[in-house]
Amino acid sequence: MAALKDRLKTHFVKAEMPKVFTPEELETALRQKLTPEEPQLAVNPLRCNEAMKKWAKDLAGDSSDDMEKARRLFNGLQHKPTSELSPGLRTAERVFRDWSDPKAVFSCEEFAFLYIALAREVHLNAFYVLVTRDSNGNPVVHACAGLFVGGQALLVDPSYGWFGVPHQEYLFENDLQTLALYLGQSHDVNTVKLAIKLSPDSAIPYFNLAQNLARTNDLHGARQALDAGLKLDSKSWLALCGQGVVAAAEHNWIEARSFLNRSLSINPNFGSSRFVLAEVLLQQNAPLEAREQFRKYLQGPTTPREAIAAYEAIARIDQALPEVSSQPTGADVDVIGSK
Image 1 (cartoon, helix red, strand yellow):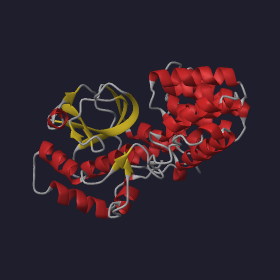
Image 2: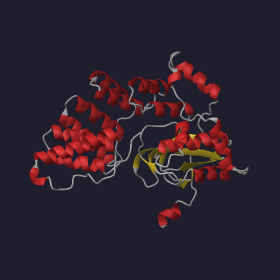
Image 3: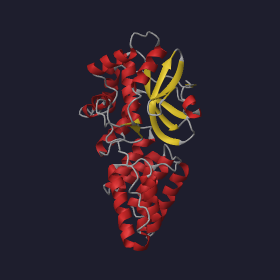
């Protein structure tokens, strides 16, 4: 009850409004940073179609008060389930398209994209916000919407179910930075490289590029991307995870294990570090420890590919160690979809 009562409170936060891009200004910025062929690959996740514009106006109703319009939009997005991950990162338009699907589950970022797109159609100053420490003080990689209303800033977070949530560490992003963060999460190497061109001062796309290249065994490219990211951020759990993934790809098992354990000591809920650590432990001939890490991984947000790999690894370990095969394998853990 105390937690529910807290969510009824609207907290304002300290923030400066990012640069506002008109569609023409954003297009000009893309042309300046990309080659003539590349802007068509840079899909704007905040784009709004005519049906969405009508929905935004219907949700906001006849209110002329910006705070009331913002709250009505928030209430309109509250009945859909959320997860930290979802099956494919969707733009605001794709989220809107899937909204009528009763089985659809949306990630925090997808909720943020949709809310921002709708809010702008009813003339609210809405922006993407990257959250690195949430209202409970937990380290996260999380997204929500940020609003500027009456000279004050607040965070609107449909996935947390909180209008005016007091997240502790966050960064309001302009549309160019938002586009870079969106593209930087792709598993396609060339798409991530576009993100780096658009926002070269952000470490996250470099770490994602390093991990993508490591998976394709381009170890030289992975190390270059990792080193570039570490110049911007060398201490976060993301940086430590990136170092662990690249070290594992290089078969430096001891170094990889050290980096991944350090990543998890900062953020125990970071699934990527947990999964790779389990794989490293298998390589170090520590099956029981590996099985424990795979089980812990399955208890949090997972990706479909890694979840299947974790179940299969647990089954192989149990088969090789029949004396403990009767113990729970984590098969009753719900698997959450992935972006």
